[in-house]
Image 1 (cartoon, helix red, strand yellow):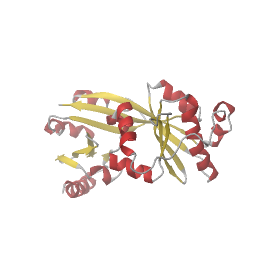
Image 2: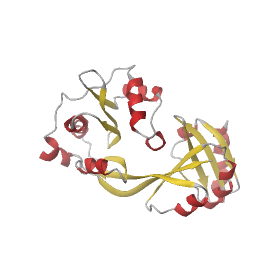
Image 3: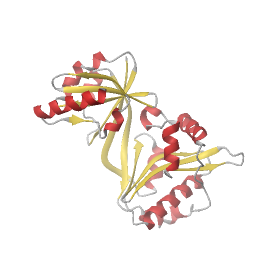
Length: 260
């Protein structure tokens, strides 16, 4: 199995020195289909909902330049976290990558502050939005794939979305014809609230009401910290999150694409 090979190879890298990686869980390597390695680096291609994502381990990042030409003639996406948006930019350009998105992490240490702001709380409405029933994932997922770029947004398969629905991550709104016109996906843990996907094709108050209900439930259970990833150039999204006291905290997720 490729995953077993990766585990063995990265152990060898650790003997050489400090290993840099964009892998935070072995789960992302479960669908690995390509593996290339050298003395100082490992490059893996793994399929994520029809997107081929590149993951790496390296004691010398520049050594990946010798592995990239070995990739198949496909489109790949490579992303990494950084505090400096220009980090690796020269390397990426030299090796054929183009910048796809600059995702800013926006966050707040206490989301309760936003809920007490009249400019936001005026849209509150507990009757707005509902939890979708099991089996309704196809129509919801179709809408998400129409709206978002799966290379950037890490959209789920129907099975993955079904699990998200079962876990209570998804809230939707439907128009009078029963069509989904707003979607909110959040991942809630005891000490952090992650806004994953937001789509609103309804009135402005709809998505605000849906989000505020989820935030109030979180705050009532003692939660404070909330965050989201927002594309730098998506001004509307940046301003939306600012209403909830979420501001850029200095961390970027740089997303690059490679077409071979």
